[in-house]
Image (tube, rainbow, N blue to C red):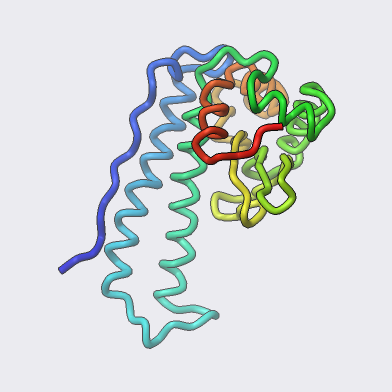
Length: 203
């Protein structure tokens, strides 16, 4: 009897097809990539059921290969679900709880935006605004691949995808203009909802 529970991709909310500066074609292509991660997650979990655990080895083994690729697929799912969920808003200055946390931990919204933009320009895959539960403050952090997470015991609140697939159709190699468009489409209500959901202390 299989213990694998397959998951299905989340649908795109309509607002994502009408973003300012990020085209429908780009979002639809990006969503297809996300659906591929979901498909691979399901496939790999199925293969793991019959993988030979007795031959597990850190240099090479079937189990190692499947576990590493599962981490990549799961990262691709989770990262993109945060990314798609908090786009579709009007951008502008951060409001509510996230605005207060940003002002407390970065000094101003402009300082936060400048730092996250620079973090995105320096990253190979992702730039994050995370809440660190140990230090009880926000940080902007780099995650270079789908399965390289910035810091343990931290919660992502802003997920900036800077892989070329996120912007090449619209901006070719002009990553900076894409990052500006990303900021212009953030939904602060969604992010504030996460702060409430996770019980992040307010500033």
